[in-house]
Image (cartoon, rainbow, N blue to C red; front, top):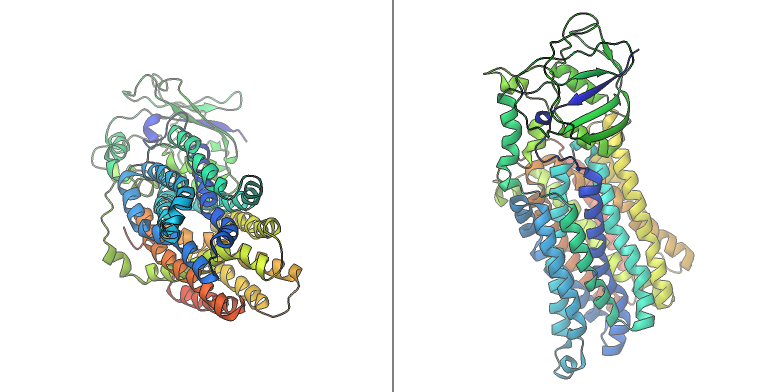
Length: 574
């Protein structure tokens, strides 16, 4: 069997792709790092609240109110952040959020200064400062969802979400590890100053790395491929990979720029028989994907082949080859799906028939305005399935995030340093399980499991296992080891939902991913506000966390039932 290398012209590529484009380095990795700092700024308060409450004599109920302040601001910019991300692009909106929450974080030591305390405004000023941090961070997750939907294809999206959420959860890990160290060495004020100043290098990295993603300003991006479909296009030169095989080429007028980049796919996947020639092309493995700018392909030759006929790759062959890409890394898939390859020219009147599959999906996020209304989003049961699950997810997540160090300190008797370290363990599991969930979901999709089955199954497991773990935690007299293990399982396995309800947002509304995430997470953040505040009053009244654990377990079970009844996987909002 003879193997070949395909050389694909610039006209076959989606317009935003440049010679330096790599979805992992340019989008996923910087987004993960940004979400990491977001969570470091967020979670440091759950450690600092213990010495602050001792210094200012705040009861548990007041601690709950103060910790909920972040979520009030966070909630306020969820839907707005999604709308702005869909309109102006996730890159710009995320950058504005970084500036905002970094400056706001620096204000908290001022809010707790002695002049403010002497004026009797400590609680009010701290509440406002944390609310401002939340306002800045509220745009981060909708912007992330917009960027992933815009740059990552459907079959690799769960893996990409797993990686970005890993950064998000690593922020919890670093925050819980560094906060007690900084607190003991420099005092609690240092947490907010240091984490706030980290926004400066982050912003520089973000602006220099992430490609622009502006869907509503993206008509040019859409126009470039469209023009290619209806004008004379240089055709691929198919060069022989093994000696002795004559490379066929097709002659066409060529008007591409002299520096048109080409995408070279070497030794690609699974052997398929070309229908128009007695030549077989091996597509078994992708050894490398490189972008070069060697100029336009040579179109001066006439078509030749060992069989003396042209090699014509039909759209059905392209689709068949794409369906067999089962072992490639997700970031290779991301670029492959963005590249539209052909060896036969379009003719006037049949551009739509010639247009490769995947163009509509690839351009759907960027080529049209986000016109779906709030009432339309709320009119679908598919939206409400995500809303319900998001509310319950955030209820549990924010309770764990804000109260877990206090639980380890007051109930299990660990000191501040040990409490922070033990709180680190569940978030470590969260980061690992989230990646596994994404990889497993994408693998199942490639093996033919339906998207609906994957989303339902992942979310069901993501809630039922934590429900059982919380029922264990609610039992009196648990040893510290059992309690820590149960807490780790309860929080860690909820991240399976990243391949459930989180990925489902892009399933049902790929062109409105930012707005959909903002809407659903608004409800989720409101739930978090209620949960974080309520825990303070419940613990103050009952001197126990058992009621909180039982209530949360019941909510997980109820949400699982609702999810399986209402969830949909097809595109609902076009």
